[in-house]
Every structure is written in structure tokens, then in C-alpha cells.
Length: 359
Ligand SMILES: *Cc1c(COP(=O)(O)O)cnc(C)c1O
Image (cartoon, rainbow, N blue to C red; front, top):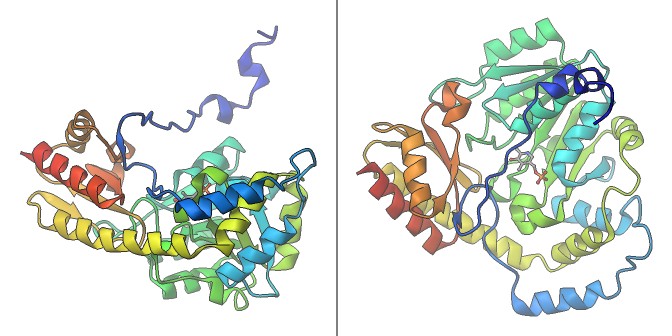
């Protein structure tokens, strides 16, 4: 240990934080982390392994990931005039964005929302302000949003579209109003774009403060860690100064590029998952004492009405099914659980286990 106490070495906001907890999922049916449950078709996997042989892992990766950037632009319809920033997952992009802000900046996000916004903002000592969504609908509370923007002049607003953990798409007109009245940056986080039929990529030319963020994680490449952000070149240029030069490793650059070039199977998998989402939602809606919330993502949020969510979660776990218990977060998430859509047999196992847990 150093001679100085840790309390004098580390910032108070770091000392008071708790680390992001990831549950140990070994031996569970894993429906907790919005992963695509499917593997790659064997023939494509074989071609990918061939391609990997050409990967020069003795060299540093291309710091600009130029080849991959071209593939990402094409696959996501990023307009020519928007600049691109790649990150080691969109988590790293959140960190890069917040590291570049002024030390006294206010960061605003609707809540419940993606926990990393708050986690990273607080770790950097920024002023984080969470704004409650409307109860029941989880829609944006626009009167509160207008007041909060006017009062705290946020340097950055995060809007997840669809939102995690609620699964809904906010009203697009409300987001456009936020883009118009916000004095700073507005990040529309489209992590679940493969499962939604809505996007702000088409608005990139219309709002100079709009940044659209996406990731390949929920599409089915979570292990590769790749996210990206598109927006005004003058803004993105500042972010590149904060980014570490080789943040996207060679294996990820090659593999994501390969997957996008052979991406048909990923789209088929997301189609299957969308179909399963409908089936799981209908099954949940048919259960007494469950309130399920409509989702445009690859998970469904639901509330337990006659038993504590903690009890139901523990029962599912004892039956070998791991989902996410959001009830400890409290507020609007009281008695809420979140299940990721898996393979048909995994979803069936979850539904049977849930029925047993509610009995
Ligand atoms: C999963 C998720 C991310 C993080 O994605 P990575 O690219 O895997 O870091 C970002 N935003 C939201 C809303 C998410 O749910």
C-alpha cells in the first residue's frame, strides 16, 4: 500500500462509487444482457477463420480503422458529410464524450435510463442530472425537460432510442424539440437499432448538435467491443483528440468488417428475435399479475403485480434462468424485471419458470 491513505489519493467521487456489477452467468439460461443467442453459420465461420490468418497482429492497428469505417457507413446509411468516431464499445464513446466536456458541465438524461451515462459522468466529477420519465408510459416528461434544459443548460443530453431498460421509443417529435432547445450536444443512443424501425440517422444533416451513437453489440457482436458515433465534423474532431490512438484492435476491425460484408445472417437472426419478442410479449400479457411493457428492443421490461420482483427473480434463478432484476434501482422500476429475448427454447424455459414462480 502507498504511504498516503487512499482517501487522499483518489477523488471523492471515485471513492464513493461502486463498480459496475456483472452477474456470473455460468450454467444459467442467460437472458440478462441483451446478447444475440445465436452463433455464426459454420461456412461463414470457416471463411472468417481464413481471413483472420491475414491479420497482422504484430503491427499496431490502423488508428483510424479506415476500411471498417467505410463498411460501417455503408451498413448504417451514415451521410457523407457526417464524421465518424469509433469506440471500444459505445461505452467508451460515452467516456470519450464526457472526458472532453468542461469540468463544470451538466449532463442530463431521462431516468430510468442506461446506467453508464450516470456512472461515467459521476466518475469524472461532472454534474449529472436524471429526469424521471412519466410513470406508466415511460414517455418523456416534456414540461420537466423544458424546465431542466432552461435551468441547467446541459452541455450534453443522452437520449436512448429505444430506451434501456424500458424498451420504448420516445416520441420523435419530442426528441426534435429537445434538439432545437438544447444549448449543447444531444446524443441519440441507438444501441437497439437492429430491433427498431426508427432512427435519427436521417436527421444528421438537420440538427448541428445531434450525435447518433450505435453499437454492434446488440446485433450479435458484443464480444468484439465496437461502437460508433456520427455527427458534425467540427464536434467529432474534438472527440478524436481525447480518444486513445489504437482503441479498436486489429481483430475487431477485421471481424466486424467481415461480419458486415457477410451480414445477411445477422439480419436473419434479428428478424427471428423480433418474431420471438412478439411471442414472449403476448405470453407475458396473457399472464395474470404481470404487466408487460411494449418493446422496440431485444428485451422486454415487465412488472410483477402480486409478488415482489426480488422473490420472482430469485425463483427464476433457482430454476436456472438468469434475467435482470431492476427493482433494486427503485423509483419507476419498483418490482420491474427485464428479460432478454433468446432462442425459442430459452424463451419457453423462461416463460415456464415465470409461471411457476408466480404460482
Ligand atoms: C448496451 C448499451 C450500450 C453499450 O453498448 P456497448 O457498445 O456494448 O458498449 C449503450 N447504450 C445502451 C442504451 C445500451 O443498452
